[in-house]
Image 1 (cartoon, rainbow, N blue to C red):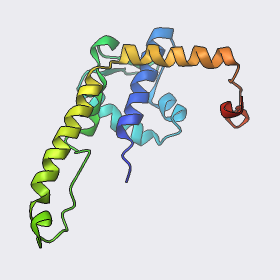
Image 2 (image 1 turned 60 degrees about the vertical axis):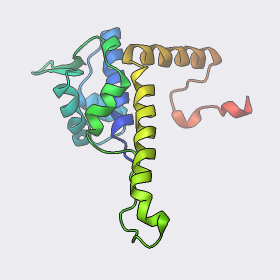
Image 3 (image 1 turned 45 degrees about the vertical axis):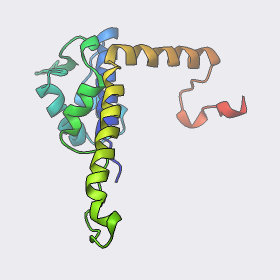
Length: 163
């Protein structure tokens, strides 16, 4: 089963960063609608993000979400670790009986492979922060706008492969 917590949390934090930058109100409801997601899932993801001071919530009638620290100080690694907690990205099968030299030693070997892969991924995520990520997305958006590929209805988007 594909875990969408990190990708959803990333889009949430980037949306809050954009709202802060452009001065508009962002709420959990706005995020849920924008992500076409369940509001309870969004609120569940907000818990570790607020605990780690990545997002702060202003409560009340005019309440909204804001970055809890400068976007330059929130790495994608921080975000990943906050929402994924202790979940491993690669997990060995546990239902294999030890019948040969491979199956008898695969757990130790796979643990090494998984640790190396996870370390490389976390290093890559640690080199990116929310400020840089938002800037990259805004560059992509400027290119898209220049090409004239934006329409009101996403179903009416031209196929870029045909252009």
